[in-house]
Image (cartoon, rainbow, N blue to C red):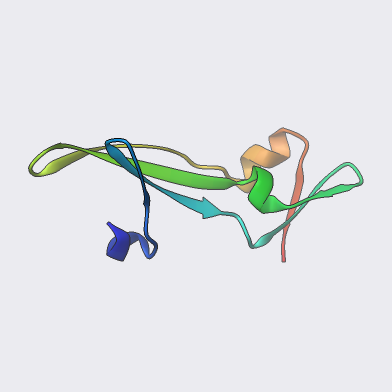
Amino acid sequence: MDRVLGRSGNLQGERTASAFPAIDLHVTVGAVTVRSSLALGSWVAFKQTDDSTAMLTGDLDTVQTAQVLGVHCGAR
């Protein structure tokens, strides 16, 4: 998985998780600038269920989702 995702994951119990921070965004809430790595980003976790299958879970944050919540996002 590390080779496919382009980064190594963290072993957490029986699952391996990888984070993908949104480092390409400039984020503000009102007049406050927020480091995007604090609040915006995605992650994925895999757990092997048998010899050839795995269960996948995660969270995908998007600019559209943030804007609905009142967060202004712009590309750097």
